[in-house]
Amino acid sequence: MNRIKITAVLFGIVLFIACSSDDGQKATYALQSFVRFNFLVSSNNQPLEYPAVNSGLVAQSSYANASVNTLKIPVTLSTTALSKPVTVDFSTTSNGDESAFSVTPSNQLTFNGAQLTDTIYVNFNERWSTSQSINFKLESVSNPSIAIGNLNSKAPNDEFTVNLETVNTTYTLSTNRLELMGTVGEEISFKVNFPNGYIPSEIESAEIFQFLDGFDYTLTQEDFGTNRNSITYTLKLNENLQNDDVFYQTIISLVDTDLYTSFGNRVLQIVKPINTLRDNSVNTASNFYNLSDGFYRTFGEHWNDFNNDGVCAWQSFFAFTFPVVVNADDPNAVLFDDLGNNDPQDDIYHHAFKIGFNTTTSPTATTNPFNLKRWFSNESSSSTNSPGFNIPSAIEFFPENGNSTTNGTVLVIPQFLTIAGTNGNTYTISIAGEGTYTDLGNGLFEIDLEFRATNDALFGGTISSSYKIYNNNSYTDPEPLATNECLTEYIL
Image 1 (cartoon, rainbow, N blue to C red):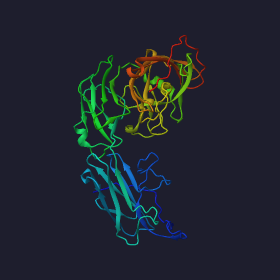
Image 2: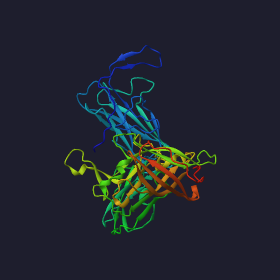
Image 3: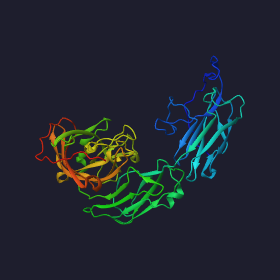
Image 4: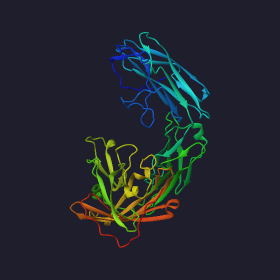
């Protein structure tokens, strides 16, 4: 059976200090080959896996595992050179139900000159109900000159223990919105992600979705395969959605089960939007992003009373802004980059009339679309908990007469956002809105819109707020609005 090998940062020739921490003897230096467990965890206690490296981490002798994901335990050989393969035998013991897991390989690891780290894979076949432990021990090496364990008595790392704790299984949708072209037989796919893995037999019998169907389709679950981090679902459209004046929509929602808890994106909106004839060469959206600037932002003013002094005022904010990437056959696609070759398969297309708000600084970072982070007093800003603070497809432009380069209307693309508090409370908020946009001259565009958000538990229904958004910060401060009615902060 082929096994995936995890490459670690190793020294081809290593000078090690061999010292006894027990007898206080003076350190001696020796050139010695040795093999040991090399299990590293990040600052959030997650196992470090290839290709991630961190030379500042210390190998652990145990790990508390609350996941049913495959656990990868690297074993590393440090040596001057290997003239032929080396095998290391190990043993596995457990104080619990051994049918709950399987180990690959069963008892032997292999090393050669090009591969000095091998991996023990622990696969979990069923959910354990009580705490138990799995102990691994390096027993012998085919080359007697290679020592077992680190060359010290304080942290030899010749044994490694996995402590199985209460399982915490959760899931989330990979996205909150997908668009259809509307042709019968069309297929689109989405994933349900499981950060802590899943047991296939539990998912096979579980009803994890609720449906609010607006058109006829078939939803198929793809084979589980070996990846226990996600499941792919494919939606196949069974009817033509070709009335350009109709907005078609189906909503698929994740629900909690006895064993799996939903978080993050819980509602998926699948739509075939109204089709409005527009001249793609106008490319209005391109005025609002600049991919050559990794920190490009649009700037805004938001009418609110977040300091709770009873007086509404404009408050400045910004959000990192990006184009919306689409397929070449999208009716509003414009070619952005052909990557300098004649192969059309790798060409990059952008939507001529849509922009989104996102961030690329880290996987869990978020930006501040529509100043939403100021709407709440205790929001979680991590995209894991509050993916709604990133809106990849947020605003759509409709040029006047379909071809104006200076003005038209805008739409806040209707969708469902998930936002959570630091207290763990989570809310699904539906958003919508509309307004106008105008070219003010000298490259400055202004969007003037009313933004609406709906959640009965949080807002008591639908609330609205006024915004002005600009493609750069050269604007003058807008005049105060005549009304003193505006938003105050909400506690999540």
